[in-house]
Image (cartoon, rainbow, N blue to C red; front, side):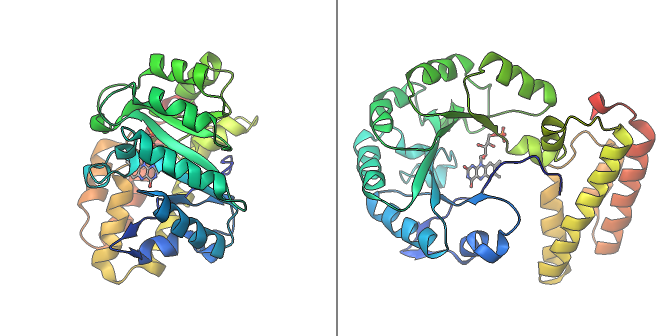
Length: 297
Ligand SMILES: Cc1cc2nc3c(=O)[nH]c(=O)nc-3n(C[C@H](O)[C@H](O)[C@H](O)COP(=O)(O)O)c2cc1C
Protein backbone atom coordinates (compact mmCIF):
# COMPACT_ATOMS: atom_id res chain seq x y z
CA UNK A 1 0.00 0.00 0.00
CA UNK A 2 2.75 2.46 0.87
CA UNK A 3 5.25 1.28 -1.71
CA UNK A 4 8.93 2.09 -1.59
CA UNK A 5 9.96 -1.40 -0.45
CA UNK A 6 12.13 -3.17 -3.02
CA UNK A 7 11.75 -6.64 -1.58
CA UNK A 8 10.05 -8.50 1.26
CA UNK A 9 11.49 -11.53 3.04
CA UNK A 10 9.06 -14.08 4.48
CA UNK A 11 9.31 -15.23 8.08
CA UNK A 12 11.68 -18.20 8.16
CA UNK A 13 10.49 -21.61 7.04
CA UNK A 14 11.87 -24.52 9.07
CA UNK A 15 11.62 -28.25 9.40
CA UNK A 16 10.14 -29.37 12.70
CA UNK A 17 10.00 -33.06 13.60
CA UNK A 18 10.69 -33.84 9.97
CA UNK A 19 7.79 -31.75 8.64
CA UNK A 20 7.13 -28.29 7.24
CA UNK A 21 4.71 -26.18 9.28
CA UNK A 22 1.33 -25.30 7.77
CA UNK A 23 1.52 -21.63 8.72
CA UNK A 24 4.89 -21.27 7.02
CA UNK A 25 3.66 -23.00 3.87
CA UNK A 26 0.83 -20.43 3.76
CA UNK A 27 3.37 -17.59 4.16
CA UNK A 28 5.34 -18.66 1.08
CA UNK A 29 2.41 -19.77 -1.13
CA UNK A 30 2.69 -17.83 -4.42
CA UNK A 31 -1.02 -16.88 -4.32
CA UNK A 32 -0.38 -15.03 -1.04
CA UNK A 33 2.55 -13.08 -2.45
CA UNK A 34 1.34 -11.56 -5.69
CA UNK A 35 1.96 -7.82 -5.35
CA UNK A 36 5.58 -7.43 -4.33
CA UNK A 37 8.88 -9.15 -4.93
CA UNK A 38 9.17 -11.74 -2.17
CA UNK A 39 12.15 -13.86 -1.15
CA UNK A 40 11.35 -16.86 1.03
CA UNK A 41 13.63 -17.36 4.01
CA UNK A 42 14.79 -20.70 5.40
CA UNK A 43 16.17 -21.75 8.77
CA UNK A 44 18.33 -24.78 8.01
CA UNK A 45 20.26 -26.60 10.72
CA UNK A 46 22.38 -28.56 8.24
CA UNK A 47 22.91 -29.21 4.52
CA UNK A 48 20.16 -31.88 4.40
CA UNK A 49 17.58 -29.43 5.71
CA UNK A 50 18.78 -26.78 3.27
CA UNK A 51 18.26 -29.17 0.37
CA UNK A 52 14.71 -30.05 1.46
CA UNK A 53 13.83 -26.40 2.01
CA UNK A 54 15.25 -25.28 -1.32
CA UNK A 55 13.24 -28.00 -3.07
CA UNK A 56 10.10 -26.67 -1.37
CA UNK A 57 10.92 -23.11 -2.49
CA UNK A 58 11.57 -24.27 -6.07
CA UNK A 59 8.27 -26.17 -6.10
CA UNK A 60 6.57 -22.91 -5.11
CA UNK A 61 8.16 -21.14 -8.06
CA UNK A 62 10.96 -19.25 -6.32
CA UNK A 63 14.43 -18.77 -7.76
CA UNK A 64 15.79 -16.96 -4.69
CA UNK A 65 16.26 -18.04 -1.08
CA UNK A 66 17.53 -16.27 2.03
CA UNK A 67 19.31 -18.28 4.73
CA UNK A 68 18.62 -17.23 8.30
CA UNK A 69 21.80 -17.29 10.37
CA UNK A 70 20.63 -14.52 12.67
CA UNK A 71 17.60 -15.60 14.70
CA UNK A 72 18.47 -15.06 18.40
CA UNK A 73 15.41 -16.82 19.85
CA UNK A 74 16.92 -19.39 22.33
CA UNK A 75 14.73 -22.38 21.29
CA UNK A 76 16.06 -21.83 17.76
CA UNK A 77 19.66 -20.80 18.48
CA UNK A 78 20.29 -23.41 21.19
CA UNK A 79 19.41 -26.07 18.62
CA UNK A 80 22.12 -24.83 16.26
CA UNK A 81 19.91 -22.82 13.94
CA UNK A 82 19.74 -19.08 13.22
CA UNK A 83 22.51 -17.25 15.10
CA UNK A 84 23.20 -20.57 16.87
CA UNK A 85 24.96 -21.69 13.67
CA UNK A 86 27.56 -18.94 13.85
CA UNK A 87 29.99 -20.60 16.34
CA UNK A 88 29.97 -23.80 14.24
CA UNK A 89 32.31 -23.19 11.34
CA UNK A 90 32.07 -26.79 10.06
CA UNK A 91 28.25 -26.61 9.96
CA UNK A 92 28.35 -23.30 8.07
CA UNK A 93 30.92 -24.79 5.66
CA UNK A 94 28.64 -27.79 5.03
CA UNK A 95 25.65 -25.51 4.41
CA UNK A 96 27.65 -23.25 2.06
CA UNK A 97 28.85 -26.33 0.17
CA UNK A 98 25.20 -27.26 -0.42
CA UNK A 99 24.59 -23.66 -1.59
CA UNK A 100 27.43 -23.97 -4.11
CA UNK A 101 25.95 -27.21 -5.43
CA UNK A 102 22.50 -25.70 -6.04
CA UNK A 103 22.19 -24.50 -9.64
CA UNK A 104 18.67 -23.09 -9.95
CA UNK A 105 18.30 -20.92 -6.86
CA UNK A 106 20.35 -17.88 -5.89
CA UNK A 107 21.04 -17.46 -2.18
CA UNK A 108 21.55 -14.61 0.23
CA UNK A 109 22.41 -14.78 3.94
CA UNK A 110 20.98 -12.89 6.89
CA UNK A 111 23.25 -12.99 9.94
CA UNK A 112 24.40 -11.46 13.19
CA UNK A 113 28.02 -10.93 14.28
CA UNK A 114 27.96 -14.11 16.31
CA UNK A 115 25.97 -16.05 18.87
CA UNK A 116 28.16 -15.55 21.95
CA UNK A 117 31.04 -13.46 20.68
CA UNK A 118 31.10 -10.48 18.34
CA UNK A 119 34.10 -11.95 16.48
CA UNK A 120 32.57 -15.27 15.42
CA UNK A 121 31.89 -13.88 11.93
CA UNK A 122 35.65 -13.58 11.37
CA UNK A 123 36.01 -17.38 11.29
CA UNK A 124 33.25 -17.60 8.69
CA UNK A 125 34.09 -14.76 6.35
CA UNK A 126 36.36 -16.77 4.02
CA UNK A 127 33.71 -19.48 3.61
CA UNK A 128 31.06 -16.85 2.91
CA UNK A 129 33.34 -14.96 0.51
CA UNK A 130 34.02 -18.20 -1.38
CA UNK A 131 30.30 -18.87 -1.91
CA UNK A 132 28.24 -17.16 -4.58
CA UNK A 133 25.65 -15.04 -2.73
CA UNK A 134 23.55 -12.12 -3.99
CA UNK A 135 24.26 -10.26 -0.73
CA UNK A 136 24.64 -10.59 3.02
CA UNK A 137 22.28 -8.77 5.37
CA UNK A 138 23.94 -8.13 8.70
CA UNK A 139 22.41 -7.13 12.02
CA UNK A 140 25.43 -6.05 14.11
CA UNK A 141 24.48 -7.58 17.45
CA UNK A 142 25.26 -11.02 18.85
CA UNK A 143 22.48 -13.58 19.32
CA UNK A 144 22.85 -13.69 23.12
CA UNK A 145 21.95 -9.99 23.20
CA UNK A 146 18.59 -10.64 21.54
CA UNK A 147 17.58 -6.98 21.03
CA UNK A 148 19.30 -5.49 24.07
CA UNK A 149 22.12 -2.95 24.05
CA UNK A 150 23.13 -1.01 21.00
CA UNK A 151 24.14 -2.07 17.51
CA UNK A 152 27.93 -2.48 17.16
CA UNK A 153 28.81 -0.12 14.32
CA UNK A 154 32.54 -0.64 14.72
CA UNK A 155 32.16 -4.37 14.06
CA UNK A 156 29.80 -3.57 11.18
CA UNK A 157 32.50 -1.37 9.65
CA UNK A 158 35.07 -4.18 9.98
CA UNK A 159 32.61 -6.62 8.45
CA UNK A 160 32.18 -4.27 5.48
CA UNK A 161 35.95 -4.18 5.01
CA UNK A 162 36.34 -7.96 4.86
CA UNK A 163 33.14 -9.06 3.16
CA UNK A 164 33.30 -9.34 -0.64
CA UNK A 165 29.54 -9.55 -1.13
CA UNK A 166 27.16 -6.61 -1.41
CA UNK A 167 26.00 -5.74 2.12
CA UNK A 168 22.61 -4.80 3.44
CA UNK A 169 22.49 -3.14 6.86
CA UNK A 170 19.80 -4.14 9.36
CA UNK A 171 19.07 -2.96 12.89
CA UNK A 172 17.39 -0.19 14.86
CA UNK A 173 16.41 2.02 11.92
CA UNK A 174 13.44 3.87 13.35
CA UNK A 175 13.38 7.24 11.59
CA UNK A 176 14.40 9.05 8.42
CA UNK A 177 17.37 10.42 10.36
CA UNK A 178 18.55 6.91 11.34
CA UNK A 179 18.36 5.84 7.69
CA UNK A 180 20.18 8.94 6.45
CA UNK A 181 22.91 8.46 9.07
CA UNK A 182 23.59 4.89 7.93
CA UNK A 183 23.55 5.59 4.22
CA UNK A 184 25.78 8.64 4.66
CA UNK A 185 28.29 6.89 6.90
CA UNK A 186 28.35 3.72 4.76
CA UNK A 187 27.77 4.81 1.16
CA UNK A 188 29.19 1.45 -0.02
CA UNK A 189 26.23 -0.59 1.31
CA UNK A 190 23.76 -1.99 -1.17
CA UNK A 191 20.71 -1.22 0.91
CA UNK A 192 18.93 -1.36 4.22
CA UNK A 193 16.50 -3.89 5.69
CA UNK A 194 13.91 -2.75 8.20
CA UNK A 195 11.92 -4.80 10.68
CA UNK A 196 10.40 -3.21 13.76
CA UNK A 197 10.97 0.34 12.51
CA UNK A 198 8.75 -0.26 9.49
CA UNK A 199 6.08 -1.96 11.59
CA UNK A 200 6.11 1.10 13.85
CA UNK A 201 6.07 3.63 10.98
CA UNK A 202 4.96 1.89 7.77
CA UNK A 203 5.12 5.17 5.86
CA UNK A 204 8.92 5.45 6.26
CA UNK A 205 9.49 3.42 3.08
CA UNK A 206 7.40 5.92 1.14
CA UNK A 207 9.09 8.94 2.70
CA UNK A 208 12.54 7.57 1.81
CA UNK A 209 11.72 6.66 -1.76
CA UNK A 210 9.56 9.62 -2.81
CA UNK A 211 10.57 13.15 -3.73
CA UNK A 212 7.05 14.40 -3.09
CA UNK A 213 6.71 16.07 0.31
CA UNK A 214 3.89 14.75 2.46
CA UNK A 215 2.03 16.67 5.15
CA UNK A 216 1.55 15.14 8.59
CA UNK A 217 -2.22 15.06 7.90
CA UNK A 218 -1.73 13.05 4.72
CA UNK A 219 0.53 10.56 6.46
CA UNK A 220 -1.92 10.01 9.30
CA UNK A 221 -4.84 9.67 6.89
CA UNK A 222 -2.96 7.09 4.79
CA UNK A 223 -1.87 5.26 7.92
CA UNK A 224 -5.49 4.96 9.02
CA UNK A 225 -6.42 3.57 5.58
CA UNK A 226 -3.47 1.18 5.78
CA UNK A 227 -4.61 -0.01 9.21
CA UNK A 228 -8.19 -0.45 8.05
CA UNK A 229 -7.16 -2.49 5.00
CA UNK A 230 -4.98 -4.71 7.19
CA UNK A 231 -7.78 -5.11 9.76
CA UNK A 232 -10.26 -6.09 7.04
CA UNK A 233 -7.83 -8.80 6.01
CA UNK A 234 -7.63 -10.00 9.63
CA UNK A 235 -11.42 -10.04 9.85
CA UNK A 236 -11.62 -12.10 6.67
CA UNK A 237 -8.99 -14.63 7.75
CA UNK A 238 -9.50 -15.00 11.53
CA UNK A 239 -11.46 -17.78 13.16
CA UNK A 240 -13.66 -15.96 15.65
CA UNK A 241 -13.34 -12.74 17.64
CA UNK A 242 -10.77 -14.03 20.10
CA UNK A 243 -8.28 -14.81 17.35
CA UNK A 244 -9.15 -11.58 15.55
CA UNK A 245 -8.43 -9.46 18.63
CA UNK A 246 -5.28 -11.43 19.45
CA UNK A 247 -3.92 -10.75 15.98
CA UNK A 248 -4.97 -7.10 15.95
CA UNK A 249 -3.42 -6.52 19.39
CA UNK A 250 -0.21 -8.23 18.22
CA UNK A 251 0.05 -5.63 15.45
CA UNK A 252 -0.18 -2.82 18.01
CA UNK A 253 2.74 -4.23 19.99
CA UNK A 254 4.88 -2.54 17.33
CA UNK A 255 2.53 -0.25 15.38
CA UNK A 256 2.62 3.55 15.97
CA UNK A 257 4.37 3.64 19.38
CA UNK A 258 4.38 7.44 19.06
CA UNK A 259 0.59 7.80 18.66
CA UNK A 260 -1.33 9.41 21.57
CA UNK A 261 -0.72 7.26 24.66
CA UNK A 262 -4.13 7.13 26.26
CA UNK A 263 -5.88 6.26 22.99
CA UNK A 264 -3.26 3.65 22.16
CA UNK A 265 -3.78 1.98 25.52
CA UNK A 266 -7.53 1.86 24.86
CA UNK A 267 -6.86 0.02 21.56
CA UNK A 268 -4.70 -2.55 23.35
CA UNK A 269 -7.29 -3.03 26.11
CA UNK A 270 -10.30 -3.37 23.78
CA UNK A 271 -12.20 -6.60 24.39
CA UNK A 272 -14.54 -6.78 21.39
CA UNK A 273 -14.22 -5.93 17.69
CA UNK A 274 -16.68 -3.03 18.14
CA UNK A 275 -14.65 -1.61 21.03
CA UNK A 276 -11.46 -2.11 19.04
CA UNK A 277 -12.76 -0.26 15.99
CA UNK A 278 -14.04 2.72 17.93
CA UNK A 279 -10.79 2.91 19.95
CA UNK A 280 -8.79 2.92 16.70
CA UNK A 281 -11.02 5.62 15.18
CA UNK A 282 -10.56 7.76 18.31
CA UNK A 283 -6.79 7.26 18.20
CA UNK A 284 -6.50 8.50 14.61
CA UNK A 285 -8.80 11.43 15.36
CA UNK A 286 -6.74 12.62 18.31
CA UNK A 287 -3.48 11.96 16.46
CA UNK A 288 -4.69 14.27 13.68
CA UNK A 289 -5.40 16.93 16.28
CA UNK A 290 -1.93 16.87 17.90
CA UNK A 291 0.50 16.19 15.04
CA UNK A 292 1.16 18.78 12.43
CA UNK A 293 4.83 18.22 11.72
CA UNK A 294 6.13 15.36 9.58
CA UNK A 295 9.37 15.33 11.60
CA UNK A 296 7.37 14.41 14.70
CA UNK A 297 6.03 11.31 12.99
C1 LIG B 1 8.85 -10.82 16.39
C2 LIG B 1 10.02 -10.84 15.45
C3 LIG B 1 10.08 -11.83 14.48
C4 LIG B 1 11.17 -11.89 13.59
N1 LIG B 1 11.22 -12.86 12.63
C5 LIG B 1 12.26 -12.88 11.75
C6 LIG B 1 12.36 -13.84 10.70
O1 LIG B 1 11.51 -14.73 10.55
N2 LIG B 1 13.42 -13.78 9.87
C7 LIG B 1 14.39 -12.81 10.00
O2 LIG B 1 15.33 -12.77 9.21
N3 LIG B 1 14.33 -11.91 10.98
C8 LIG B 1 13.30 -11.92 11.85
N4 LIG B 1 13.27 -10.99 12.84
C9 LIG B 1 14.41 -10.04 12.96
C10 LIG B 1 14.22 -8.80 12.12
O3 LIG B 1 14.16 -9.14 10.75
C11 LIG B 1 15.38 -7.84 12.30
O4 LIG B 1 16.58 -8.47 11.92
C12 LIG B 1 15.52 -7.37 13.73
O5 LIG B 1 14.27 -7.05 14.30
C13 LIG B 1 16.43 -6.13 13.80
O6 LIG B 1 16.03 -5.16 12.87
P1 LIG B 1 15.00 -3.97 13.26
O7 LIG B 1 15.69 -3.18 14.35
O8 LIG B 1 14.82 -3.21 11.97
O9 LIG B 1 13.75 -4.60 13.76
C14 LIG B 1 12.20 -10.92 13.72
C15 LIG B 1 12.12 -9.92 14.71
C16 LIG B 1 11.05 -9.87 15.57
C17 LIG B 1 11.02 -8.79 16.62
